Length: 156
Figure 1 (cartoon, rainbow, N blue to C red):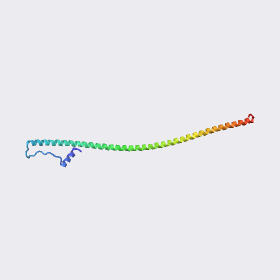
Figure 2 (cartoon, rainbow, N blue to C red):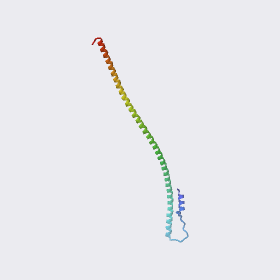
Figure 3 (tube, rainbow, N blue to C red):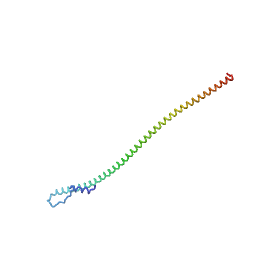
Figure 4 (cartoon, rainbow, N blue to C red):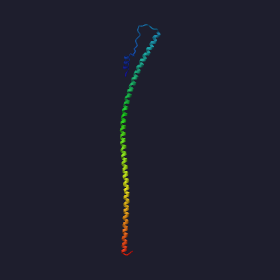
């Protein structure tokens, strides 16, 4: 708002006082003229100060308008950041779910590997038993054959 609309507003309200020049009315003592002159000077300086205050108020209002615009921009940016943060939260939740799935898969793989290792140990023991048993059987068979030969040749 500039000074002109405020002055116009004061004129419309009837608060804008203009000073009339002294008319040819009754004369007053010399002290009265001096007091009136001081009052007129005060009124003039007051009007000037009010004009300056109007200008300053207009500047302040313009500053508030600019501040409001900046605050609106900041609000928009904050809203955008909130949306981005929400999106990031969703992505982090998805990543957490994927990591949980990977953990479950790794646990299943560990279980499978443990079972496989147990089977291998069991198979190894069975094969070792089979090998030892076969060797024992072979040795027993050879001893039996030697015993039969020794009996046949009358070595025993």
